[in-house]
Length: 629
Image 1 (cartoon, rainbow, N blue to C red):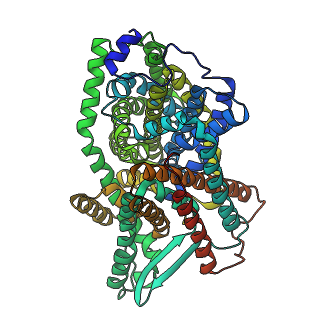
Image 2 (cartoon, one colour):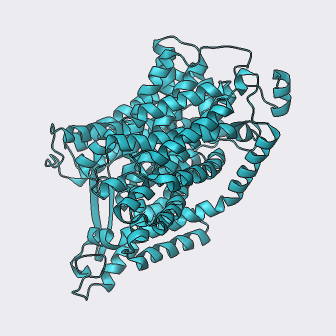
Image 3 (cartoon, one colour):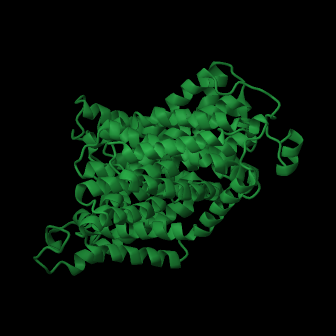
């Protein structure tokens, strides 16, 4: 296909034309990409275990890349920066795939080996890249005007505005320093407590609280007031409705009611949450995830039909232009087949041919829908957990029917889900990256190879991060709830052993259906119902700051500039606090510090004052933005 034909068929000319050759996948770009992939992979792992959500790393990675490559090394190639942000998102995706599923292994006290964790995330990551290759021209190029890929498009704009890279980089780094400093002072040196809590008058067992964590404030700002508001709605339903209600109706009994081991009359709000609300929340999240998946079925069918039609008509062959070359399709097929066979026979996983075939089938089907969905709603809102739940439900039943039960069956089912989950996360992120590359004029096959390098770099270290965090805080604890991993554990155990409080699960399922009929995002509200309100409260405050910025800024250009500025600073808050959290966990793990040391200033007012300073800073940074930023 000639350049003129390509221009007429897509109606688009990239920022760097196909005929122009700039430094792209250089050694410096690859080295920087590896470092950022590991850093953001660890940060997102911590964040995902804490709040059950991860955030995109592409924009902060692009800003940091420009600050280093342009500011320090005086490199002027936009394509080098594109390679760096592509590799960085690999770390984010690997972190998401790992923390959404693999914590279940720690909760079963199995202590998975580093080799097993690396094998799972590496095979899933490679499958995500390979399976996205034949979809690129269909989704990114052919549907350029219908699928915006919001994060990929925004990242392209950041890369193209290289003249303001220094200012943007300062925003990210200033947020990074503030987030890291607050985490170090609070949970590192124990200067003040990072959780405040209070009851509500005579309203017995009704509790509200907040974690004093900049990362949660940043998450709320980025996701916006609507999603943050629905998350806090779920939290309020649990902590000022369900928990007091259970305490009220159970106050007169001296016998324990399954699954709690103590009578309700002897339980406080946290005891009721641990004994009952976690199961209600699990049922809500599971069904909300399936509802989200069912709503995407038309998209799934359309994606599969488009892919099959493209294969029949030979439209997936790599073009002659630099900007139209993917990894050759024969290598994609051979690589996919080799990975599936490796999964089937490798002793590290023991999923057998049934599990390997399930990974191949569900992997491709769900990669197709995930790659399209992120083109509409972005990677952070992709229903990856819902598709993973659907996979686990089916493969768990298959394993049970074929006689693979007990611990071996549970591990095999979780392994299949973890590989598919990682593949979906990686495919969604590389879809955004390829959109960025399409807009700026990157070379697709170089981005695809760069993504695989990033997968290897972060995949080899993510197991160590999980081990350190588990040893320091404990998976499933109040400090590290690991909500998605706990959910996967509950589902697999329930199907295999049948020992779950199904009535509570059904209560949660019915609640999710009610959320959906109310026109809410049932998955978001269900996650808020499952998590402690202490986590969703600061997220809501971040959403309120974003709402204030949007509401009191009348000019569209100025509003966009303020949103972008606040997002960069919020991204720094998330990265800084999350990375310091990983460092603190490592120090606890090696015995340098004690996570149970007493707090020096044990006053809620001190903690609230610190959080207020961070909140006001986020507001002021956003408000100072100019329309020409």
